[in-house]
Image (tube, rainbow, N blue to C red; front, side, top):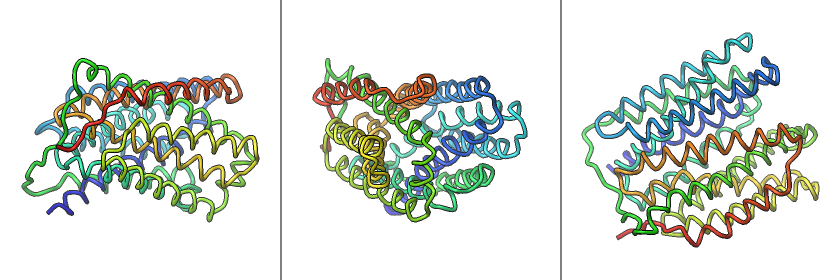
Length: 364
């Protein structure tokens, strides 16, 4: 039945993004900050980034068809192992392997999960599925007993999540429902993916840098993310923004326009927080922008590529616009000790100039 198939798809995507948010972006990072020197931190996180890029490109090139279940299951097993190992690490030496495994596992899993959904959903469902999964992952990650837990406990929760996600792989005989999209037109269509990579890389870069800078301000972090009700409200904002974005994408609204609106929310929210000292309201606006562009990024390969090209396109998109751009944004703030205003200007040029060049697949 359709609701069972979509339920499994939603479970797989939600647990994958939840693991990324709770473990890769919080638990593992906090462990690295606690146990590593500044130089060791760069090398450990650098190894995770490189393995993430390699995993995404590898999955994009190799996973698919009858072996897709094996790719996802293997990546989930590696992710589980990484979370357990990181929780029991007692020194910086004990974090090298978990960091590398985390990057490799997530690099493969994020790409393979999209390829799995591409074989089991139609385009009308894809946007809503991605929006729901993205919003639920952010909501669950912001639950007070998850967000405020110790890194070890967060690792256990993330490990449990990927185990739960493996349920999606156990299905009866399925009837494949191919994505109902058309391929991008030539000759401009061959540049569509690389234009999208450039656009999303700019958004991820500036978001990673801005969020890292906001998290470095202790007074802001304690005031906004230190209260349980505040965390609930942030999670709910994420959920509704992601669901709204997924719906708009499913009815054919432009990815480029949604990215433009998302960037406007990022910039407005950041200005409210940093310049106007409007802590929680500014964070609400900022996080709505995060959910908007994140949903568009994940959904883009599903909405614009033929089924057989989803994994390859997702691998390139996530490797460049996800792993590499995120590392560059965080590294920029760490090296400069501030969030440069010129970064916002550069990305503003991208989100204004590129959306008109992006074509989106349509239902036929």
